[in-house]
Image 1 (cartoon, one colour):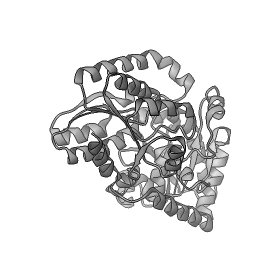
Image 2: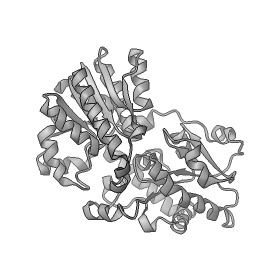
Image 3: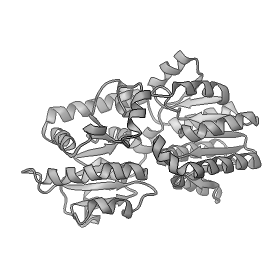
Image 4: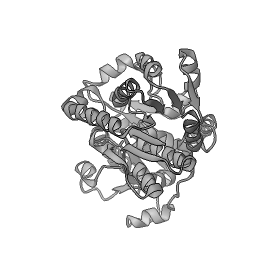
Length: 382
């Protein structure tokens, strides 16, 4: 069968790659064509010896209404070329992975041309823009969800779905983690405590997060007893040293490391994380965290006007309460980050309660094998 997949950011590339691995396992003769990134491309090359990459997600990932405007012409051009490519290739199914702003337009287009549409990792209509449910019903042949709390929501809204668990468990549990001493030695550091810093994958997220992260690092090291603490920035895919260097300057106690996010998180005393998939990864790795989120002053009021959930982090959403703290917009300050990280490091009971909440989140997510089970369900539906 011929599969056309579309992922628009780093998390989609991760989940898309695991799904592709499952599809190839079920259908070794499968043909793949995709918008994604290096992880999806590696799976296809390994299975077929060839690349099916049409477009790299790093060329088009944007967040926020006003951030989107300068890139609107390019995005519209991408939509046009994607539609043309789908028609020319004639896939058996188009599999859309999150990325709703782009993918809903492709869903409508593919549906109108008689091409089957699967949506993997549901757009977060339970948080905002609920009107998109009409599009899910109209243009999507089968919805595949990955969070347990979505089941009750979509049942209530009359949207049929398939739920096979969350694929992130496989990604995290299957990762090969570099030992802490080896990781630190590669940086020329002796063994000792450090805090992981994850500023997001988009350029706009890095620019909005890093200034606060660096000032927090400076302040923590000025506190008696923390003079020896160091900080590792987990460099995001498709970012480079140049994205972080202007903020870090010459600080030798802050380093950027690429391609080792899980290892960095697993050995850290604590983590400060931009809201997103990385926050749930920290939960599964057992790393105490505080989440930060900041948008542009123009975009944030629009977000407040449409978002209907109490939490922005997936882990907190899954259990329906605050397991770890979220510092949003004006509350995301060096002072608040410092206070929360010190709370994590100094209050053993607080830390243990957070980790107990992590175990509850993992249990609710279900067991292993979600990607393979979802791939099997997709082929059965086809």
